Image (cartoon, rainbow, N blue to C red; front, side):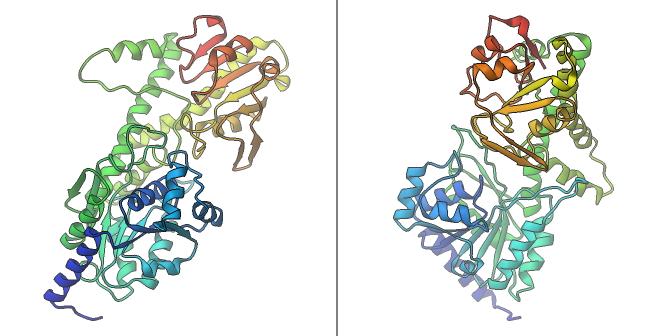
Length: 445
């Protein structure tokens, strides 16, 4: 290991900062999904040359052809940047050698036992370590537990013989992507950055300031990691609270929606959250359990997180049970009953069904009744043994069904028409709130 003088350390950092400020630094983004691709686009838009790395050759080919597979990415904008040579995609980790800044945007899933699975983060860190050179900035944006950047990535990088804070710079800057949000994008969403030391923080903060309107530095990568898992835990706990209220209102024969609408008229001290068939996506069902797992290292039990997860995971079972209660009105053998699921993605107007509660609802219902689904954004489901194709939403289909179960409130669906043609509707999203006709057909969560 070469020991650098203080003057050499300062000189290397100043050289890196200058490349970032004049935007001659080559930016690498590993993982070109909902986080990585929009970030790569923003960097290219301000003049950086960007190389995106993804192990999916289909994604690589689509990007290099100027085609977007993510709704939030404007295809014309992508095409212009590709044509200008400002962005390209690759499946080859050897391209890491060219990069001055490397941003890691890979999945951080859970195991079946709710234990953090860092296999993708570790794999990428190891690939970087094989090719790392002095002066590179590495930023982890994947959501994870406090200590991942410092205790997992840093040792892998330093196994290369280079020293973080002297020859390399390492930060955590948690992604805050909200797919489908037309108001907040990568550029105008405040960006938190925490380094493993002051040199890393200075380089990381400067890097993000070239793209993001407001950058918020924090004292360490551990703080930055905890910021993100707290944000998602806050949402998970509050969603669980209204989900539990919905379960109670069902017992009390009260409308949870009426209760919430009235409660939210208070101009202070309350924030709107709404119940649903469960929680989905790659954040709310997963990230809080990263914090729950890490807390045990400190002999600390995070009771709210555990309870929130339990309540939210219970909702698909409740939806299934209430659906079966409603189906008794059909007055025919259970095996002949037909259920249409309307919307399977975890969020409205998106094609993403990762962790979507609809998948579990389908799995539960399939044991006793025939299940079909329609989703204008998800033409096919292939998830843990469930293989289905979306049915065309026709009058004939609706008339065949004993019940229509609204699980995702896509804005392109004419719900008044659906209610008019269906025998009965179980609306878990209150999307039929303003429909005045056929109220006798509608049952709310």
